[in-house]
Length: 147
Image (spheres, rainbow, N blue to C red):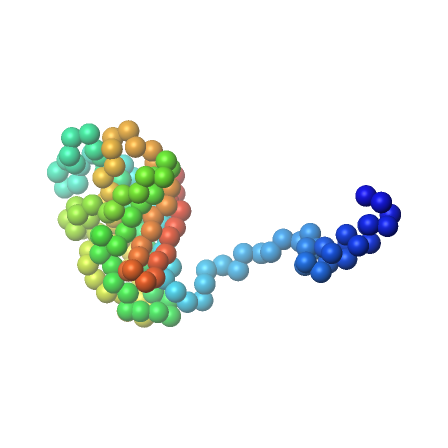
């Protein structure tokens, strides 16, 4: 770079706010729907009931919080998982049969629920990558921990 262009380049960087520093993570938002995936396991049955031939179960433990908003509704069909290959699967109805399943309920403002979701991918499906909740107008997603 010529000596003549160097000051112009530095001035341009300063004007654009590019000072070489990094922005720190501000943490979770002060309000909104906060979804966290806390655990995942692979199962070949739920309460003694096997999935359809060629399928298996992933059970994902989540917490969902209505921070400053609500009430929010949750139900198995409001959750989906994205697998590592991009395949998306809606939570299985067997979620309702889990003792701590994410059954149909309403979370009040500033309330939180910890529950478990069941998904039924193909036997050779890759691991889950993210889990997502939506009520049609709001949504939240979280990374799923490794199996």
